[in-house]
Length: 107
Figure 1 (cartoon, rainbow, N blue to C red):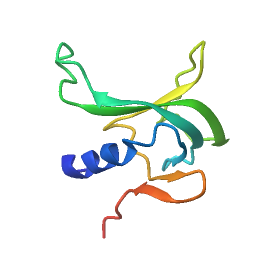
Figure 2: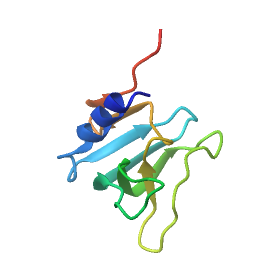
Figure 3: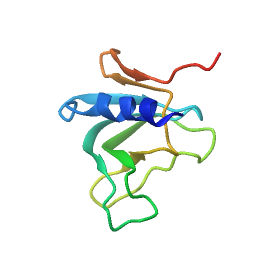
Figure 4: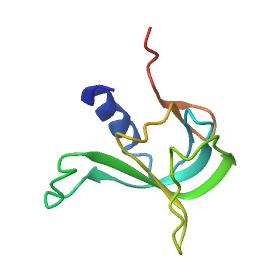
C-alpha cells in the first residue's frame, strides 16, 4: 500500500473517538471497538520513527480469524488491536454500517 493511501486510512479514523467502529480483516477477523489513540511513533524509536498508527480498544470479537496475522493484545484493563502498516484492514465501518474506509481493490 502506498504511504498516501495509508495516511487516508489513518486520517479517516481521526474524529471518531466516541463512535463504535467495526473493522474487517482479510483473515476473517471482524471486531467492534473504539479508537483510543491515533498518532506517530516517537522519535526515539528509530526503527519505527515516522510510522503512524491507530489503537483500537474495548475489542469485541464478532468473527474469529482464520489465522493469527492480526494479533489482539490481551491487556489487564481491556483488549486492543493496533492498526499499522503491517495490520491494514480491508474495511472499517461505523456500527450502523456507514463505511469509514475501504481498501482499494487492485485491478
